[in-house]
Image (cartoon, rainbow, N blue to C red; front, side, top):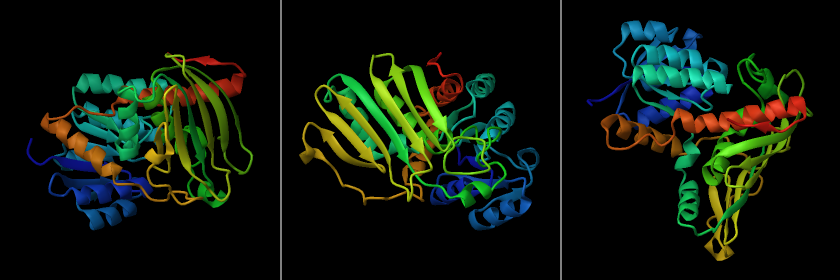
Length: 336
């Protein structure tokens, strides 16, 4: 296709990062519209990155020739924006997670099927070199039979962080706390490494913050179709904020990714990569967003397949919402 035109919906923190990525790819795409319910934010981002500002996607689609809609609204509004775009025949890039429930994710999947267009969910860490090396080693059998994994997100968020937006820390718009909002990427990597999840059991708590509906600590166990077991740990109450870490263990070797860096792979520590600074709590996003955009653009051209689709992200949402159901009921939850 000729240079695709993009509309960005949501001009908050993550929307601004997408705007940066699009400006880095200005030779491959054109940002023609920025929409936000707070028109001033749209105006500011459009002035920085290009396009014209609008108060809604509806206004942008009525005024502009748009090929791709990028959804960067609060999570609980992803579905309504994505479905509007799909029903208008547009391709869609939606920030993680696709939605706050499996049922609402399925509504986006149905809209995608009706539209026959492309949708990718941002799971940029699948594009990290550390992830690629780990998944390649698993596929080649270098770790042997994968037996277990640990997804741990040991972060700190201040009370001011949760007080900074009415949607933060709410079930309606955040869809959950440390596990859904901060932990979804690491959960996604655990699933990428261990395969199809079939059951989850978890506990959650709100222990270090006030005026939020959702958890700031979650711990659970996931059973996978292969028989492998995974441990989930996600918190925004680990002062001063440590790392996001994935461990994958097999009967012939292991892999460890810490803050996106491959720190161990194989059966010898001599294979380890760079070790990150202790206590790091990443506040910026990596070049992996750009790599996912390049995959999406290649899919538009028909030269690659979408590497992270709605069905892929649905598994992560199922594990997380299953963990919440388990925490409410005190029982394991089977995953469809």
